[in-house]
Amino acid sequence: MLICPNCKRKNLGKIGVNQYYCWDCFIELSVSKGVIHVHQVEEDGTLSSLDDLFDDYERTIQL
Image (cartoon, rainbow, N blue to C red; front, side, top):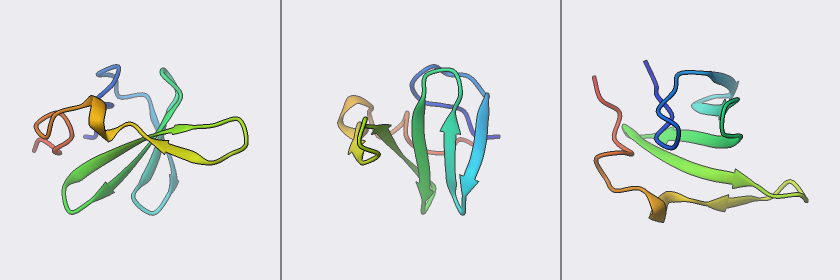
């Protein structure tokens, strides 16, 4: 089960292939090779990376 690395909740909606949206903290997540990439959706619809706010362990999918 995927957990948001920001708010630590499971309230995620699937928006595409390996793409999710956290309904609690309003960020977009994408998964590639077992690593979660975190993005903020800007007002104009572009994505800004938030990966630098989390360490590698927080962004690794835990089985």
